[in-house]
Image (cartoon, rainbow, N blue to C red; front, side, top):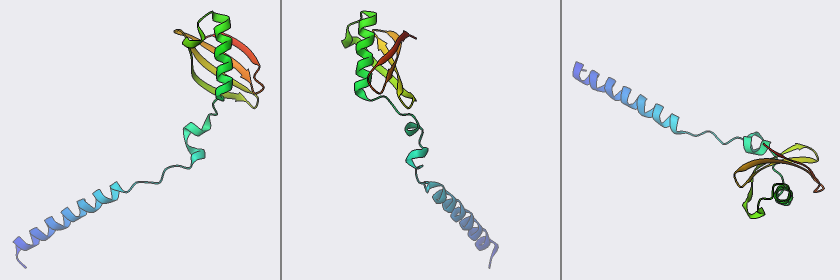
Length: 108
């Protein structure tokens, strides 16, 4: 075997090695289980409770209820949700229980 042939084979081996590494890098890992995903870790308030908070904010602030939008919500404990709202540009926080009783409405 000539030196020229040996060089070609080593270049071919290196090229095949790079291609194999590239293909291995393209293999994707399976997605995490739903209980391990960050979005499933926070339980949001049901829509009807968010609407109750929006109505409570409208009464307290005097802002038209059509201009009050829930921005985010989360479960505080087994019976209480916190709903963050935008009342015409003013941030407001509302606590509501699972029975639909608004516990508090406060500016943020």
